[in-house]
Image (tube, rainbow, N blue to C red):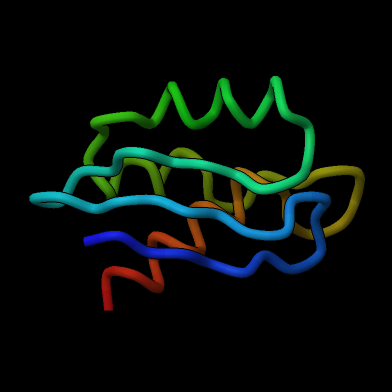
Length: 81
């Protein structure tokens, strides 16, 4: 299932991703730190959705209370519902 998520409080504007059989794939961030976000996308490729959420939830960027990885975790949590 292909999904998109509008981010809040971070440099990236949107996240596109696919969930297939409980696994995350095809993660693409729009905006933000391109190299870092490509790295995050590659690291979570094929990973079980709950494991991605566990690893990325609560990561903070410069005292914003969130980060691009945290926003991905939030997007995945929302997509589970």
